Image 1 (cartoon, rainbow over the protein chains, first blue to last red):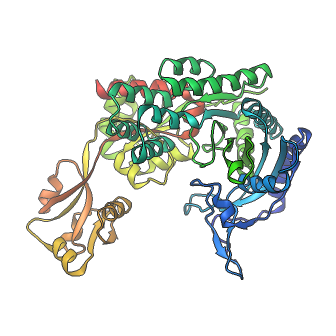
Image 2: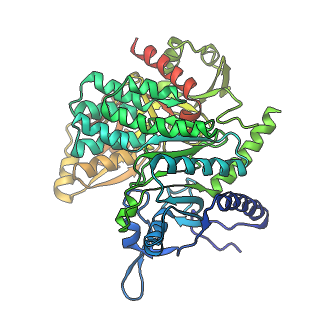
Image 3: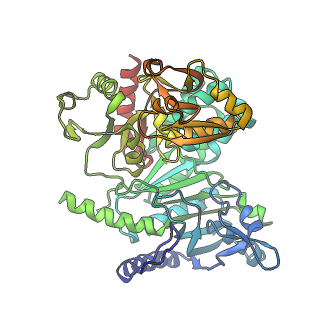
Length: 330
Length: 220
């Protein structure tokens, strides 16, 4: 007899579990070897804590009252609980703090889409390391993690979360118009973006350069192309990206990294560098991360921070996809 | 050997059958894509051309295939993208053909829409675009009861199922023949070029080149 489980959750049987276990161990070894200590936090937080993450995806989808009427939330990611933990436990110790996790988080799903309501994430948080240096270290760990998972073809997209916020400010697009433009950008709806910018009174020529800017992705040449397209906001963003990319080159880990000026993650707490991970074997994003310099402040500790999280089940799917692609080629 | 981003197959393009088929083939021709095999009336679904695999499908399936990455890029109507707005695809280009309007229509000279609104506070609307209809009436502050129809929506008001319809209109002839008229225009729709978000990153050069060719072909 079949007894139901909620859509978006799953049972894992031994064959799959063995493979997942191997993957988890490989990732944890990478994190530990680089000085990231594993932590665990409760799956249930106070809603008020999760709400400090502020942003569309980070907001918890599952909230309920406990026996004394407190509003609780199932965590929707691990970055916010770790920010809370660091603010509480490490306030008096010398940064940087290097922590990693392997944990389940919970989000609402679209019916029948195969999305998981309960999913496992593996990631690191580097708290209290300055911008470029911290970002580079996190990317290095991410690359090592992808290598350990055997994802030879995975690519890391590197973008800048402040670029469009600052660019729109420079262009004088504010309030509702600004939000509408950012929504089109986040959805990567270029037709809508063009419309929204025009409606905000931007000249046709500037609209064209803005849209062109979102399409710049590739190697270092992208920074030069961007320089030709924009004013101060663009200049600042490419200076930040250039510094990070050059440091990656110096350390010999830039090969997998694609600079992407169209990257805009919708988690509300990012600032500066943002990351996304892709693999040609699967059509969706394997994980992401970036800098979230403002987040720690919301917990009363003014430290810069960066990190990434990989969706474990998606990485597992990509492993199988890459091995299939390998067979197809031979 | 590490080989970031490499794929082993040519770029795949979803080509919509149905109303957009002819216009799509014309634009592809103008963009230098060989469509002769598709024009030959073959019942095959997948066609190999130089550097590009053309996959034919229903327009409403395009966002599904593109989102999953089974095809890298595709062409479909804005009406489909609005109706399947939960499908995450990148909308890269307005191809400007296949122009038509999403409208609210009702029987000529009939006030059932108005009467339902006045006396019942809710209109009964038949449509095959439930999400577009729902969003439209919500955004205009009116309540409706939705009746989802898969076939000819024009039939519904003729036999008393629903006070009006929300449907796509190109020339307006079908409406006219069924003694229906446009009461409100909701949105204008054209063919759009869309991409999978991972392909857009990993096959950037190929997709940018195709986008540029299609832009020129559709505006030329």
